[in-house]
Image: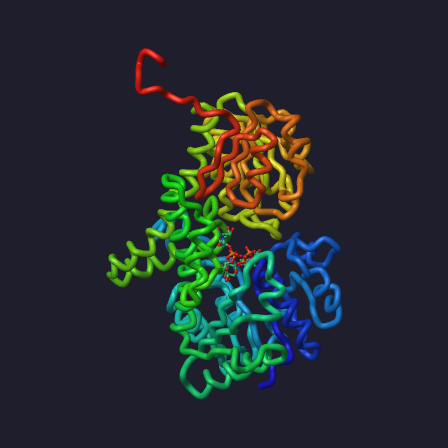
Length: 480
Ligand code: UDX
Ligand code: UDX
């Protein structure tokens, strides 16, 4: 079989950009991305795509309507396809066995049942969603148990390593493509088919083929190890703040060791995003299911350190503001979980906003890409707030940083957007309540300049001087 027709189930952050790039690089293949959500599909077919990703608009414009299609006609697309990507979401379970840790595979299972129901010809089914080790086997069981005569399936694991904000570049210039499959002639043939697609633009030496389990576990391992580096540097940032060390200098000194390398050593308010926490929780759950509690506890600590970092930073904000933010106005600059994306999943800004609201503050929020509706949706979620009315009354979303900071007691910078670096901080200082505070949770601002302007400045992993003269105490009580 030569793949001529691809269907992707799930038009999200992974399915959309991945299939757009496949369409761009394989003009002879018809790629159809389908989704249950009518709204999402109509956005993919409009001028305003449902996700913000640098370079994505250009890729979609180049292929849409030619060999790239976005559709709600899931059944027809499955019928036509030679190869089907499963790219639906796998949220952490919020109920029952494994609650708060195990991924909920109901959408993946649903996708497998749907394929079995619809398919009339042989299919290569590729799991793109991050899944627990063994998921391919479960998909295979469902497909085999519901197989029509004359229809056969091959299941591959092809995890996606793209990061949001750099997705198009990550897809075009992937460090590696990983494909796992069964070690049988049928499995190897299917692996070759998928390799042939990627070989349109990825050198063969960068396409790694493994057995299915290795592929599934490698995805979890890669995310866990990246997150572990962030938790490691964040743990050191706490030591830096208690001593005179600067975590940026420590990270540079450590990262120059070629065995360690400089990437993912940026201390921050904590990591967010849809993958790190979910995948580590998944790993911990697997360890517990396999009766490996020590291994599970080891990885759990990466998440615990991240929670500690978010809490530590937010507590510092409250302590600095004379131990109360009640009745004060706080500006949260940046709401996305990192720059160059409008995604807010697990964003540390949500934790900061929740804590400030619980402590009685009013908050102004500005983010260059996150929609106002998304911010209210996040903050009125039942896990975040018991009173949506309270959130609506005390949260205001602004369209620019200057209006958002006007009249505030403090700014808490949660996302490292480039535009925050070049704002006119003299102007911002002038319109804030005094003393004016800046809490730089991303270490991107010019702290010396802010201190010179008059701000009180706090950041991660470095003690900064204060713009007031320290009082000297005499050892002689008579001269106090
Ligand atoms: C998802 C998973 O969360 C992640 O674990 C995996 O690695 C890749 O796929 P993402 O693309 O970011 O990541 O998810 P999301 O943006 O939520 O997109 C999933 C899409 O699937 C949604 O548009 C949803 O409407 C759609 N979907 C979900 C279906 O079309 N059918 C379903 O049965 C379930
Ligand atoms: C991650 C993985 O990088 C990607 O390979 C995988 O496919 C999905 O999960 P993503 O979550 O999109 O990608 O973004 P990433 O750039 O990894 O950042 C995750 C979080 O870590 C962000 O909140 C980011 O701000 C934070 N981070 C990253 C740091 O705090 N310090 C760093 O040095 C790097």
